[in-house]
Length: 111
Length: 122
Picture (cartoon, chains in turn yellow, green):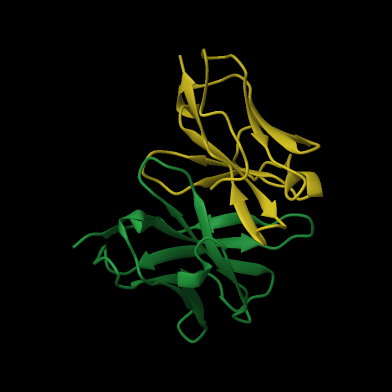
């Protein structure tokens, strides 16, 4: 029962920009907890893409960027590439559940 | 480089107990500043946080699983474990162990195991 809602799918042509939203509530994102993003390639563990709303770990391409505002957050992929076609998840902390919560997940398709 | 590796039976019978371990290498499980976690993912579905341990062995569990979950730490072997009792087919999933780095304002998962598939079936 995910408490962070993402669109099931987004798509774009190579080189375009796609944005994935992550909608929470006053008990998680709206409470000020950071949002983090993960990329999951088929058959593999999730990989950290963005932490602390906007920060890219070393090795993550600059075409990935994150933002947070109010009870929502977004991940943008600019200059979309074929290798970006996979699943993406947001994650935060929820005070009502006293634990970590993940988004419902979004599949990015490169047209 | 920290590495995590899950181990345990890949097949569990309904109503029995699922038991998994996660061996940590490249760092001590007793180091402060981290939580040790279990996350699962049914085939074709999203990620579900199961619970976490701190270095003192204090636990927090997902309320939806709390009545069936036990997590523990073995500092002598540098590993942590998961037990989920009274399993059903709904517990069939890939189970990941993962480390969370504790920071003010937000904790995130920085290292993950490769995952292990557990199937509940008679």
